[in-house]
Image 1: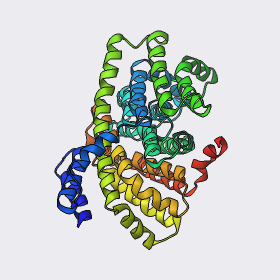
Image 2: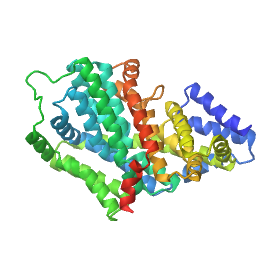
Image 3: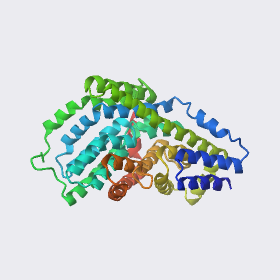
Image 4: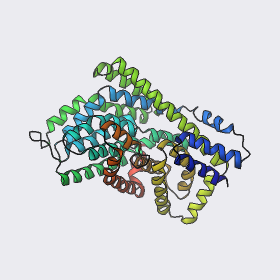
Length: 429
């Protein structure tokens, strides 16, 4: 009865368009009022106390750092480097978009931020070269999903906090899977571009020029140092992931304001304001998601779901395949942060019981939810790409299907070859 009330109310709220944070809160309140003896005040208490966490401070600071770098000239340098590396290929502009998103992912930690920063430049450029608005926007939207896999990743921070898993290990674990997903998208973009005849314009370079790459690399050196400083500082024991996020903000201000000189005082103000608005929304979602997850734990709902799944099979591959299917469906309707907070306490004990490493599972979980960024009807990256590119959502949702298929194939590879996620963390240990 309690499970029916909880998830039934949640489904109805989502169906009628209630924002996800309030849908989680209302469903928990309804289940407590009609099916439990707990006080209703437990919802607000857990929502507030859950945010009193030092590791969670990394989230707003990484958000701010990504926004500052987007406004401070970092995006332009990364685009120039990507253009020198792959712009000469068939479908050059689409390849540049994907590589630039991979670079920016190592800075921002956010999928939508990556789409906005890189797509804002590249979608209009591709449309101007007759790539087709749907394809151009789909490339940017799908490549932006890499932003939550390649470190530093905001979802990895959240998963580490909830699952009591080392955030540093999660960052290392995401590097190879992030490159696998990026490679899958590059191959897909190349095949589509070759079929449709998307080639460099007459007069443009059609061959790889090493000196152009070296020049672009030198111009982008200050931007490329950011992930080195962040990851090197964490693994060198100089600072924690939260302190690394603060260092990233300071570094972004310095290079944007005093090195590239493209970050104005107005841009600085707008960056802080944008980060405050986004973070306020994020923290409301996290707080009410924790209340929802706490009530499920009190009612032993995770245990019942665990028993159901383990009755199906004790084979870890079967369990992971079932969880992947569940997560792909969840990602279509629930945002990444809410899904992480609600599902981690449910699924982590299940997979660890059948021998799956928590770090590996964290990568699987985030990679699944990254696909949710480009899966309708939620598909946050699709809406961002639609906004910055001026292309109808329906066109992008159709054009993204080949990239969606490629990401699912990459997900299966990451799921069933755990060494891809665990090799680098194993070296660090």
